[in-house]
Image (cartoon, rainbow, N blue to C red):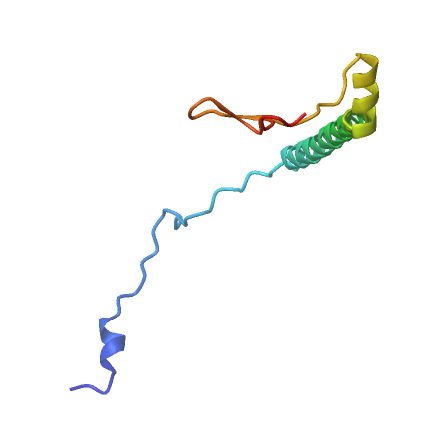
Length: 130
């Protein structure tokens, strides 16, 4: 055996050839443009502003409509209160008596009731009573 290590004996020596050694080269990265990104950002911002403007305009129009409807409701409430007061005034006993006197009506002397089951009159004056 020899004193030379085994590795040194087994490794082949590189041979020089007339061809150059080829290496893998990464393709150049194309430069990206910032313009499409800026256009997208501008479009999103513009759409957001336009949406906020339209929403605000619609809310203002709705607020005016609500105000108009509340004014109309208040007028109707006042008219209803006026009509209720007229009905209560026309149904008061003093007003009813005044209108009945104007029509020539007289107060009833006695009350009589009809019993619907057999058709009898109740509350008839007794015989001999005036």
